[in-house]
Image (cartoon, rainbow, N blue to C red):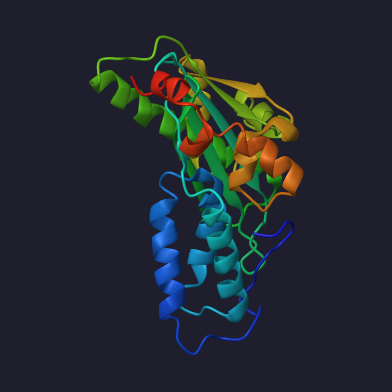
Length: 252
C-alpha cells in the first residue's frame, strides 16, 4: 500500500461483482503465511470483503505487482540460530479511519529467524496511545507463553527471559510501575499479565527507537526508506538471489 494511505469505506465506487476481489484477497491471505511484509496490507483489504470498491481493487492489484517482483521470496530459517526468543511490539493508535480503532502488531524471532507475527485491528477503542501499546504488550506476552509451551514440547525449553522491545516509554512505565494509577484502572484486568510475567522473570521489557521497531511494518503503510530497512530485518530470502552454499547452511 502507498505510504500514508488510509482507506475508508467511502473511497471509490462499489464493484458490481465482488468475486474477483475476494478471490485475490483469499489467495494473498494464504501467501501472507510466509510473507510478513504484506500482512498489514492484506489484513486491511480483507476488512472490506462485503463492500469492495474500485480503490480497494486498485490497492489489491498493487500488492500483486509487488509480490510478482519477488516470487521466490520466503522466510529463511538458519541452522545456526540460538533458541532464545526476542519480540517486538507496536501499534498505530486510532489507525482505522472508520472506527478509530488501533492496529496492533507483534513479531517474535527464535534466534535470528522470524517464527511468529500478527497484525490485527483491536476490538475496542483505546483512550490513548499508551493504553493501546500496553494492550499490545499483553497480546505479545500471551504469545510468549504459547511459544514457550511449544518449544518445551519439542524438547527445547527457553533458558532465559524473553526480551520484548517496545517504542512507547509510557507503556513500559505502566507495566513496570507497581502503583496502580487512576488513569489505568479502566484497562481490562487480563492485560496486566504483562506485570505478572515481568515479576516472574518470564519477559523483559526494553525500549527501542521507532526507527528500529520491526513490528512497525505490521501496523501501517511505511515510506519506501523505512519499509526497505525493516524488510531487511524480517529474514525474507530470495532463493534466486543467493548462492547454493549459503542457502544450504540454513536448511541443514
